[in-house]
Length: 109
Length: 116
Image 1 (tube, each protein chain N blue to C red):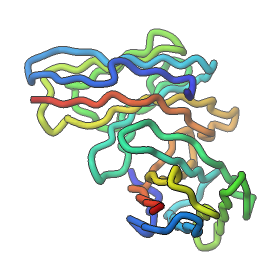
Image 2 (tube, each protein chain N blue to C red; image 1 turned 180 degrees about the vertical axis):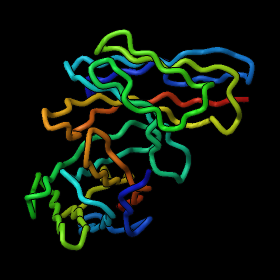
Image 3 (cartoon, rainbow over the protein chains, first blue to last red; image 1 turned 90 degrees about the vertical axis):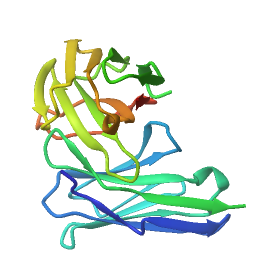
Image 4 (cartoon, helix red, strand yellow; image 1 turned 90 degrees about the horizontal axis):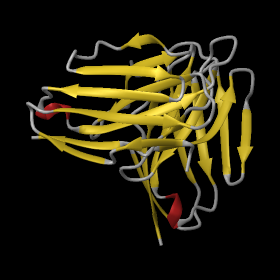
């Protein structure tokens, strides 16, 4: 069943700008993960944040987690054309992941 | 490359055909997954195998039949599919922690299936 919901559904930005997308979920989690998918391809893991962590960085990516609000955000700084993709959050509270419907990000050159 | 391969990459089949999708992981993981991705819908988890034992069958129609002969290989056998089964089928693997929590999943490139 779907656990995470991303917002917005679609985002169009200029190269060099920052992109922010949010994920809300309903039940308690062990960790929350963000994935990227280029058109028609498999998903690529970006970052995992555990329920006892509040913020995590990886290169140009910054993820926050607020368990009291059951929400997470993914920030991509200084976007590039190659960042054009769909981004999914996934929540884990057992051995399964529950994915949201994703945010489609288009970076214009 | 993520260490998870899927074949074939594209498949067109009629409703009366039988075909199989294959997934192989080279990462030494103990869990493998089949997902279905349809346009504009969240990924749907179909089957989970933990240590080669099927631990999840998410109300998937019997025309989809999984097989996990060992911890590195996973198959999805297809029989008398319907046009609405056309989708991208993704395989993933992960190392499930001792506590049983899902860690990072590594996805294959997917099989794009078209049922005519």
